Amino acid sequence: MRTSLFVLFLGTATSAFAQGPKGHEPRAAAAAPTAAAPAVEQDDPTLAPVSAPARQLAAWPEVLRLVRDRSAELARAHARVGQAKGQVRTAWAGVLPSLQASAAGVHNFVTNEVPLARLDANGNPIVRILEQPTKNFAQASVQLSWPLASAPAHYQIDTAKLQVESAALGEEDAQRLVLTNVAQAILAVVTAERVSELNRIGVRTAAERLELVRHKADLGAANGLDVIRIEQDVQAARATLVTGDEQLRQAREALGLALGLEEAVGVDPVLRIEGLEAATAAVCRSGDLASRPDLAAARADERVAERGATAVKLQWLPTLAAQSQVSTTTLEQITFPKTTWNVQAVVSWSLWDGGARYGQEASAIAATASARASRELLERQARIQVDQAERSVSVAEASLAVAQKAHGLAAELEALTTRSLDEGRGSSLELVTAAAARRQAEISLALREFDVAKARLTARLARAVCNY
Picture (cartoon, rainbow, N blue to C red):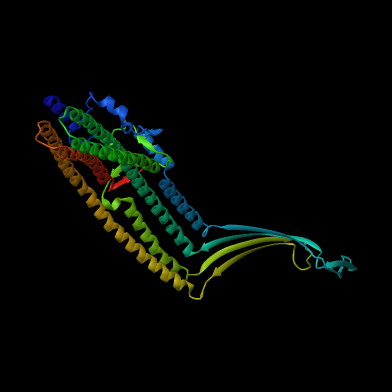
């Protein structure tokens, strides 16, 4: 009996992994002993896995399609580009011709009859009775205006184009950040699923151990204290299982939000995690830190702010415009024709505006200083983020090596403690402690494996320029 119990406990003490640490892949869990598993599953409903959500990600093209179609962050970034392009078209209006038309109909309620005398061709007087003012008449005009020389308007066009460049760079950076967020959310779901699986193995193992200890107690080989301690271990494993399942549900919901969906999203096993770096490499290219879109956008914003002060100074210059107006009326006029047409050259020069331009210039100078400070701060933060991201890879790999060693020691300790208890030299308390440490070591190993994948992904995207 001692030999058989030792073999049984040793088989459930460790969970095997399909691949070694080199690939940092989640490895398949060891199968639970077949002898007691069916009875445990019937008695313990918590061993039922968390139901899979309706939507499952099965391929990276599907991920990119959902991001493009549903991401609110990308939609806002694209809208900002559209707004900037609209500002360019508005700026062009300051140098292109404008055409205005107006028409009016007039009715006068109070009029006077005024005689109007004039001579005909033979010199005979002709008298007409006119209403003054004219009771009913209409008039219309069309005016064409073309700014010929306006330095502020031409300067604003170039400024608006620079704003489009900044918005486009912001959209590229939004693509990088959204892809990073989605990839990390996928890793979080896979990690939570792996932890949930390990938690179920832990509950099953603890429950099977409880059945064996109860059987030993019935045979007189164990006492009530041993049974209670093992029961406490089962409840602790169940509590960890409940928490882990909720973390899995929240991870799936977070993935759904990252994809722009109002539902939980799972990850199909066919979506291989080792293809994550290759998938991101297909839409993101690595470069130097200076080429990262958010830094380039910050530099563009600084140039826009600098142009603001110059634009205020250009307002001191005069402007030249050409105007032409055609007007007509049904009103009887003695000395003027009913239809007139004129062309004007208009020079405008604002000599004094109460000091508004001085205030605008001071505000523009302050905005330039603020944009410069923001750009410098962002560059410092980016350099630190890149250094931390690159360093996190080696830290994650070192932590994984430690977790692998700790997992091996925990499994060995549980096996030795089980043998000591079976030989009557150990205690149930030592076994419970060793079992809990082994379960925690398994979870920690799974988390460290996915930490390596996350660190590699983050380091790759820290300098990347994405376009999808």
